[in-house]
Image (cartoon, rainbow, N blue to C red; front, side, top):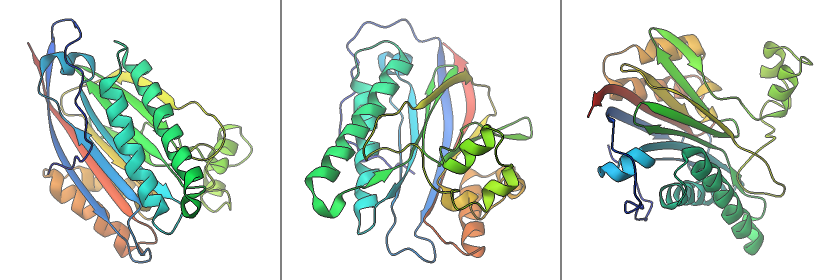
Length: 273
């Protein structure tokens, strides 16, 4: 399944070091309207370049955005953010992945904010953004909002991203338990989002990739209905497409109160060049 509508030409002409590892992945994705919403404000994208010069500088990119704003504004926000992030990330002149990623987040934030200001019906629109950037044998997580990135490695499921909500901030400060946060009125009140007023810093973290790693990027329409234990069970299936489908079906079976998007990326091989 190839889901890429961003229209850009990655910079491949800048001098880069030789490619050391060729990353081979499998991808599966599923997005659903849910049982309550009238339109799907989630957006997933991924881009898998083939040119060595692009792979060594920028690698693969995968992302999920969950828009908000109503009256199709959230759908527009997530679409604009995803396209802008990918375009700026791949076109950025810096050799540093983190610099390009942070610039891409800020460009998406400015664009969504400007469109919201210019069109009255879209005022206040915004979106989360969770991106996974894989460059040779390293990965970078980019996080804004409360969509999530998980990793399944050696049978252990780990949430790599942190939720940017008032409730989770209180948990991290020791003012609320994780169990209390689930039912808190601030559980879905975002402290950071693409779009809207104010500045922020995205979370950007890097880590090693290993063959066999399985990454899950998802909107909160999944985790609001499907506990981590069930997610782990589904991810241990041999077929990625079946796992993506079943995770979304689990969310729907539990009520499907929101749009639900699942993007799965498995590292099958890190071939030394």
